[in-house]
Image (cartoon, rainbow, N blue to C red; front, side):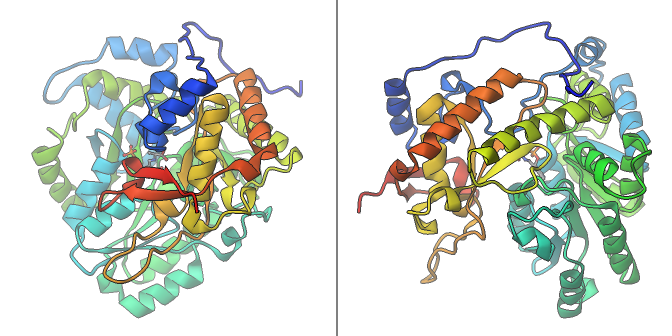
Amino acid sequence: MHTIIEPFRIKMTEALPITARVERQRLLEAAQYNVFLLDAEHVTIDLLTDSGTGAMSDRQWAAMMIGDESYAGSSSWRRFEKAVRDITGFRHVFPTHQGRAAERVLAATRLRPGNVVPNNSHFDTTRANIEYVGAKAIDLLAPEARNLCSEDRFKGNLDLAGLERLIQAEGAENIPFCMITVTNNTAGGQPVSMQNIKSVKQILQRRAIPLVIDACRFAENAFFINQHEPGYSDRDLLEIAQEMFSLADAATMSAKKDGLANIGGFFACNDDYWAEDFRNLLILTEGFPTYGGLAGRDLEAVAVGLMEALEINYQRYRHATVEYVAERLLARNIPLVRPPGGHAVFIDAAAFCPHLTSSDYPGIGLVNALYLEGGVRAVELGSVMFGRPASEGVGEMPAPHELVRLAFPRRVYTQSHFDYVIEVLESVHRNRDAIRPFRIIRQPPFLRHFTAHFAIADN
Ligand code: F0G
């Protein structure tokens, strides 16, 4: 059979809110045109994020019922630890309430002001946590990834020559660790090849710089390797994941993605000193090391979810869904990052709105238009999220790309939901000249996209 089907059937339903256009207009105004400030009960199809928004399986719900809520040494913790160890091979495993908690403790324990941390692309919370302790977060994206339309397969790769240059310039002693993010969310959900991870490891090993994998979407990355990297087509996803982690010294993880859970994360490593420092700070801010801010039932859900994410039929369906949407949008001449990523379709908002410049925030205009048209919530990944706000006489610096991400929650929406999204996009594209420029009228000092207020710029 050629049709790839959802490898599950639906046991419980949740009603979708259907709103009227006039209502949506009023709601956008009340939310200061920032869709993060909308109430979810007014969103018909929510593609804001794939983080914590997935549907859990019957096996996960069943596991939650045996959650052991003991403060220390619970049996749920042991099952969580075993799942993480079986996949990553790391000796020390620490649960955290989500990915950024692992990032925060890692940054606080390993970095000093002035240190430098390279990454293929830092996610916004990773960058913020590094900068918060006075260190510098440097993106080293492979040159082929800068062309949004090329069909290269591993456009999430880290720039090896750039890494060599950075180590030369900064000195290995000023780089306490290097990160690699799989898949590369901010560069379009693009995968990183095993070869690239191996090459990064070789460069780092010569200078004794540890490698930390940001593993949020490790299973999606393993599927890309299985499908497209020579030598991996007959390897199962668990083996591929194990090989990826064997090249690293530590990992941070948001289990809200490929843990198929609604909350959770972890930090894992081999080094005893790193583990000792991590454990001490974890107790201060997250909780005892056998629960790390999570309920026992959450540990259970993650332990099952991590393994389900590595099932080949699940990944086949997930990637087929993203490709289904991407193909249809491309056929309607909607400019996309290509090839499509693992968890999302990324629209090139600058190309979508040629009448707008980066200082008009075309991504914000497009996100607002999608909500107004059909109650679809997407997210801007452009100059609001990644641009540098103006400071001390220096003007605002735009981001390299103005993207809008349609992130796909896991196991939540059906094909007809996506047909609806395609129709909404087609209609917005037809009337794209009507997308308005926006200005920021209020913003916090960091991670501004979450809470900024916008206004339509009529100039
Ligand atoms: N790293 C990457 C690559 C991420 O995509 C995220 C979260 C994190 C770290 C932080 O994890 O949310 O559990 O604290 N990304 C979400 C998103 C929020 O929408 O892409 P967290």
